[in-house]
Length: 220
Image 1 (cartoon, helix red, strand yellow):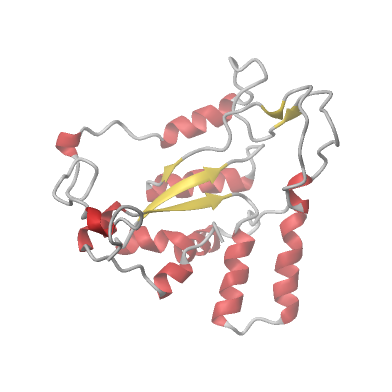
Image 2: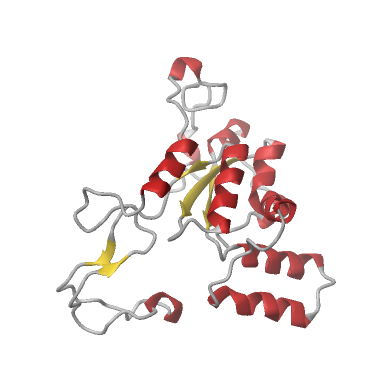
């Protein structure tokens, strides 16, 4: 799933050019429900869990609960074992490609602490105030049932808000000032190429061998 990288740990990718490993970035989606996928995958791969435990965990995915009731150590272990091991073992780069929340929940506060302590790189979902504006014809034919939720059939009458959105409908004011303040606290200062560590974007020692490109090269 987009919430864990355990398969990569078990079967790491191999490159013809070793230096390309420093150019690979793994993207993670992190929401208050994704911990269940981490836990279920652990159940399935580690063994020892009963069918009842697995189904109980799966059932909670659509009930809106999070794992904020767990202690801090458990919260950390879930993520350390699912994806942050790459950072701790220095075996890959992690980009939190999506994370978001509608309220300043216990999960949000815990994740803000975790992201700060791990110095995670991230992108918040979403900037937009709404998913659909009035008068938009929504095509749900390509969507899965869990993506449709309560979307109307035909054209929208009112704005359909994105509860995680940072902005209001005017796209000038913030929906939640506390959220912006929390996100700003995670932002890092700009680092110039001069200060960039070896293997980073400012280091040009790794030149891609174009013959490895599968489209225009030999792919070998």
